[in-house]
Amino acid sequence: MFDDQFEKTFRRLSNPFFSMGDVFERPNEGTVQTFGPYYYGYVKTVGEDGIPHVTEWGNTKPEKSLSDSKVRDPYVDVSVNEKNRTLKIYSEMPGIEKSDIKLNVSDKLVLLSAEHDDRKYEKKIPLPSKVDENSAKAKYTNGVLELTLTLAKEKPQGKLVSVE
Image (cartoon, rainbow, N blue to C red; front, side):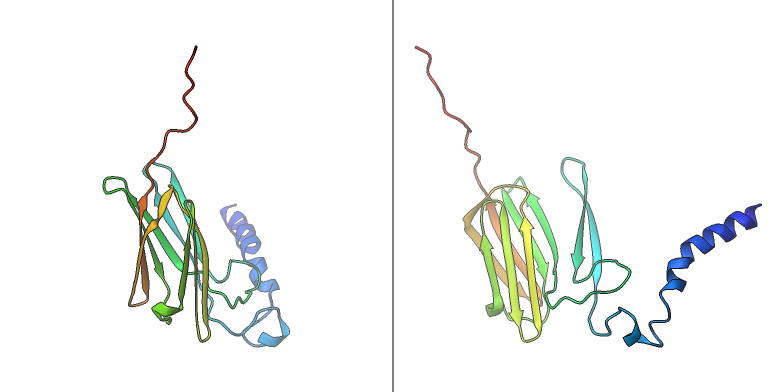
């Protein structure tokens, strides 16, 4: 009985692999492209509120066939320090010069782009808190961009109305 269940499960899970054909022996006959590089990953973090967040990154997503993108999606990490009232963004973008980097900061979003020779990076980074865009300081060392922002002071919302 166990062998039958195992055999059924094995066939169900391995069927997609066998139906793809042998893309390594005949790569041009399938839908798989033979140039790259291809990379994909995800990062799991737990926020201060205790809620886990999963962020994907890379220039391809898991699919039946690989797709190529000329634009790379850099790995990005965002951390907030409530004590110092700062927000830091780290981004890995090897193979470019600091003069190739373009940053556009708004109160809730950072647009990051860089291009050097055949390497092109782009990323829209949503921010967990409002920031003061005039406080932005960035440095790029050994393929890693570090962007430091000051958290915006929260203003009371609405208008105080006096009762007559």
